[in-house]
Image (cartoon, rainbow, N blue to C red; front, side, top):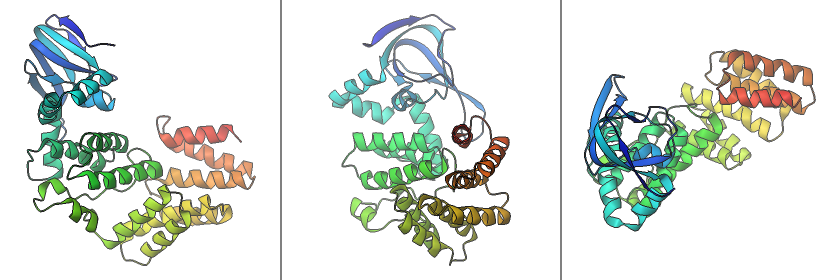
Length: 336
């Protein structure tokens, strides 16, 4: 679809909050208001779009549902781009991309300000830093899919930028977390935001990783990284190291991961025993359903279909149909 010009009358809605995003808009003339909820307070807010300004950029580019409602309050003319045409436009025109990334629509500026208040006490002015901060916000809030998309965009736009190395590290962290825990799962990443550190350099990013608050956390995520690369033996060894520490939070998480390692190396009976013990000691563990899922699959692999069915049905009773683990369990149950 080529860019098209659309006329709107007062009171029209261009898109609603939650709508599927696949377009970016430019206000040629008129009045458009974005209505949204403040990320920190939950209060309703409104922001006006200026003539000549893009809006709907963030959600349009990363193809996630709209986070605001765009209302027309006067006769307005708007140009609509699909995401591919918009990206083609900005990548061919340096002036547009620099202007767009510096402003990045009222929506992104607004999100960026709130991200900075949530992630750091300082305000950045470099547009690439602002872009990076969006990824930090999503990763910090365990919105891994959105974090992955934003870090990938950063690397597309700034492949040699000062934050490219740490963006790659963050990207790997988000991918590992999504793979191992699913959207919104796992421990909250402890991030030090390099955009607030004037001494930050790429060399320093490579030589010194300051993303971890403790040695146990660093070892744990090294294990998670091995898991994401299917190096289960190496991962097992790293998680065992964490068990020797006094950090109870990461000892629990490492114990959970050890059970998954046992499953992946096909030690199904050991996996069942491990998770049975783990759940008896940690009955309120957030990812108990996931532990049960590995137990159910282990029973399935040793051909104990009755026990596997019992556990899968237990998972379905404690999870919601919208949960990723529910869908996986439902599929596994059908295959028995």
